[in-house]
Length: 170
Ligand code: PNS
Image (cartoon, rainbow, N blue to C red; front, side, top):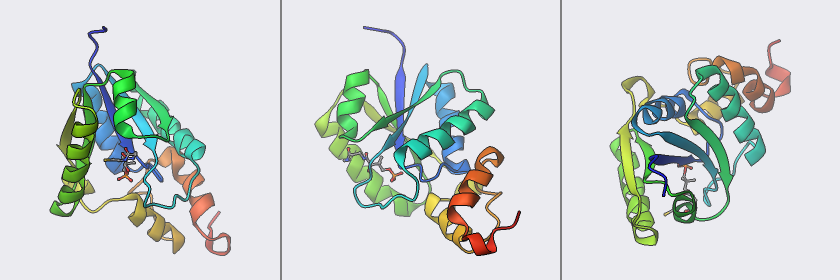
């Protein structure tokens, strides 16, 4: 068995935001390898395809130059993936108390499905408390400025997809 400590950072990433990159960056300092896992959230209807979301994350990772972070796709149970790759941790970012109940439930369920990994919660940075992919999508859909919320290298991709053509600025 390899000694490297792998963490999986799962999510919808629809699209990736500064909230995600903050958690990924901090996780990369705690573990030997971090796998950003684009997974299926059964209750969400994504705006970007899985492949598009991976492309956006890869662009962002290129700009961050984090040597120990990779991206993968999984459409099954998170616990099965974690077991398969031998990860020791599932990393989740916690914003407000409102996240807690849902995340706690998932952590307990994942622990029952596979007890070889721990869910590790990282508190979100204060400036990202309010930030979510849904907020970004909503602001973009009205043509608002999302440059405070998503990395500059993917701003154009997100704008082209989410801002209605008639209100897109060049
Ligand atoms: O960014 P999200 O939408 O909050 O991420 C939720 C996600 C995708 C991590 C969660 O829905 C998930 O783990 N999906 C994979 C399927 C699974 O294992 N579901 C049961 C979790 S207890």
